[in-house]
Length: 67
Length: 188
Image (cartoon, rainbow over all chains, first blue to last red; front, side, top):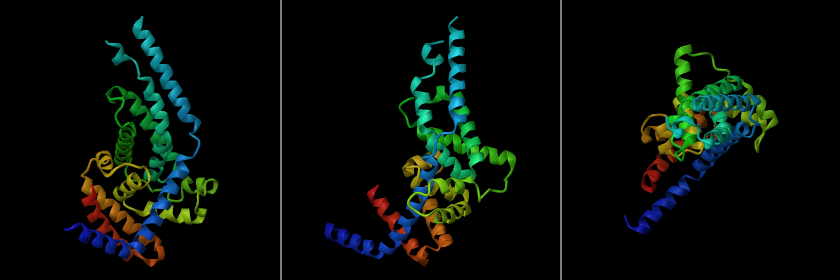
């Protein structure tokens, strides 16, 4: 396929897909907004506490190991 | 025993902490309910911590954690048997606080539609469309072929369009998916 042919094909595709990509965009935007609404939440304390505990257990373990 | 085997890489905890928001969002999309999602994330953190020696710093930690979370989700599902999904879960509660650019009502409809998808299609469209993974990474996380991910995402889009009846244009989306899969094959 020559460059101009492939360009023309691409343009035709783009035209016929305008309506379709509009719909796909709407779905994409909603999905991203929904996902982001959770990502943007403050991390619950339970996870920070958990990581602290794991960290503390780890350093105690590694200290004991060196004795 | 060498120090490297014994001590936890200080970057590990930091990266784990940094991945928590997206892990929580992925867990929500799998479970459909916030309490179950956070329990799943907690189990994932514990698993990841226990396995941290097998993780190589500098490689894709987010993908590694998503893989653990997903495996944990399906193994718990198999153990417990399939529970009734809480499709009216706290995901929608949180939307009242974070409506984003769309109205909260629109979002609730979308969440319900997403919850109606088969699990394999839902995780595929979330990993690609929201978590920001490549098709290759998503295939690795889901332990399947790249082409399988592509077709699941495409079917998920069609199904969502049908459920939501977006401007009644589900026919167009089918064409677009067929075309975009073709063009992606060229560009990738």
